[in-house]
Image 1 (spheres, rainbow, N blue to C red):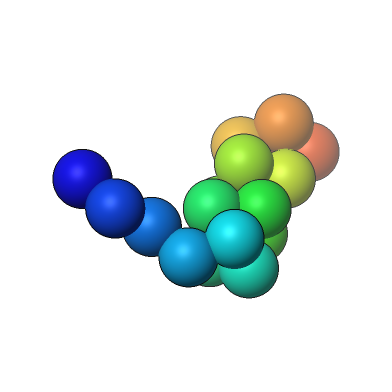
Image 2 (cartoon, helix red, strand yellow):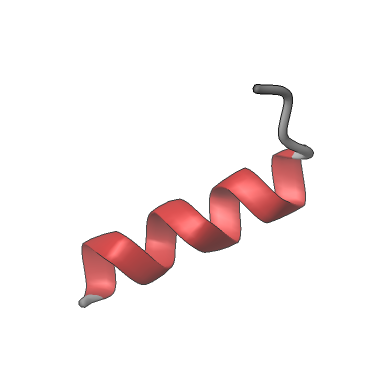
Length: 18
């Protein structure tokens, strides 16, 4: 699954922050 840097970054941060 390809994901844009911004999307991946945001999603990753969201999970980490949460």
